[in-house]
Length: 91
View 1 (spheres, rainbow, N blue to C red):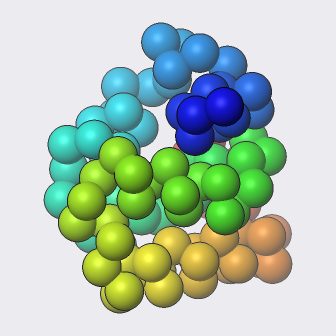
View 2: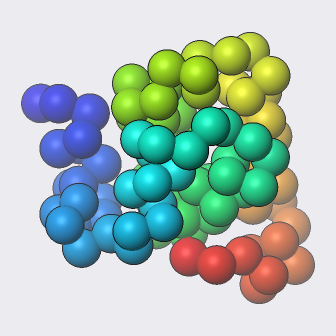
């Protein structure tokens, strides 16, 4: 099973995902705001962090940067740890 299909098992078809998420995955250069939005979307919809990270890295080569990877896991951890982060996140 491909990474995309595995994530679609949690989120439904990529055709139904918000356009900004698809842009963040495939087009936008990774940045803290982009990673924050992606982690909120994936974590908020129950996608395991390792699966979400693997998909992001596969879809966006600059996301393989160590700083981006660390930021991704930090944001995921914050999302799961702090209720205020969840309340303020868009997913």
